[in-house]
Image (cartoon, rainbow, N blue to C red; front, side, top):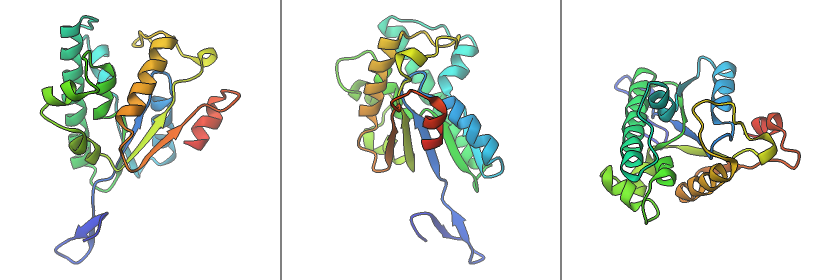
Length: 196
């Protein structure tokens, strides 16, 4: 076998499941990029939708107090993990593109440490979570002039979104294949999408 696959009993190569996580602060273009990749590579990729959107659109009781946020971040983590596992098992020969990843919860976790409380509460650690993804593509939050407030599931101001963006960037900083797509000088999203 190799880093990308292993031998099948018939002598062929079985591809190891490959996962890309699209991450970054709110209004970075993650969902739009995922949709574009799905259209472009329809038979070669499968998209794992954002777990937070699944929960919040489904009526999860969204809270801002510490206990409420802790419950919702654990629910997001476990939903994310199960959706990824299901789609990877159903599509072993496709690239799995995840709209957000498991370490994003660190940025939202209301605690004193840099994610250690979040990781402890889900019985995991940085190495385990980093190893779940082959590549990490971080899309910075859009500049303030382009920040999207039309999304009914988004409740962060631009300043809150930018702080989350930096926390998320830090959470993934140790991944060996992390790429950051920043905003260009003009703030044009199509150019950012093309670079991604």
